[in-house]
Amino acid sequence: MPKKIRIFVNDVVLDAELNETDTAQAIWDALPIEARGNLWGDEIYFSIPVKIEPESIQDVVERGDLAYWGPGSAFCIFYGPTPASRGNEVRPASPVGVFGKIAGDYLSLKSIRSSPKVRIEKV
Image (tube, rainbow, N blue to C red):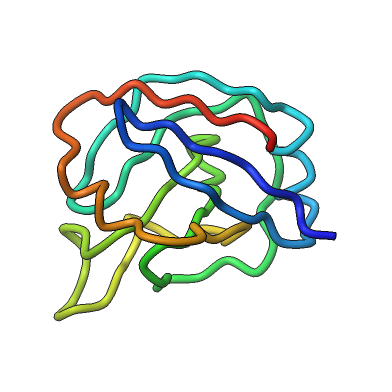
């Protein structure tokens, strides 16, 4: 059975599912997490208390992907192009390990401005 989480970004509430990776399990075990997010194009990222080598790292991800960026121990939420993107692709600053996906409308994140308050919890 997939692990489900709820992500609160200011007033935006998103549900997501984690995949079956060690990274997803490590993040699940660390929940709940609260942080102050940073924006980089259409990405929200923030450091989390998880240190793990992500599996299956990727240079390009999909809109709605949740990923772990190892060098910064960061939880990343991708919902559109970043400054590193070429054309319409979604490209992280450097490779990330995708560990989950937003279930539903991630476009509400486009209303978020600088330094959002983020909370992630188990459902």
